[in-house]
Length: 142
Image (cartoon, rainbow, N blue to C red; front, top):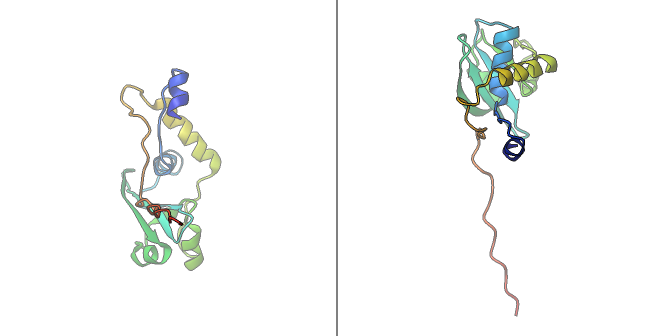
């Protein structure tokens, strides 16, 4: 992405799913309750972040659906593509469903308002340590 931006003399901005979802909630679904934004991870754990009533994101974390349910405040909302496992365990949870259209509108608005002078290059957001192993030495045969 950065190479394309440099080659075309255009700025590159990085917004993670949590930032875009927070913007969509603030813009289209104003809330006074805390919202747990949940992303699937393709594993047993879920990527999560809290959106406070003042629309600030905090406490990025990984957790299982069961652990989240045990600690979830009764008055909060949940949203994101990782909310399905929680809803399967507790269908009475309050879901805030953000449409793809609203999500993309939020991304467009964030990009339009971004100031290249104040915005750093896109950076990855790692919530899990690298899951790799060192290569084994080659076996020598005689």
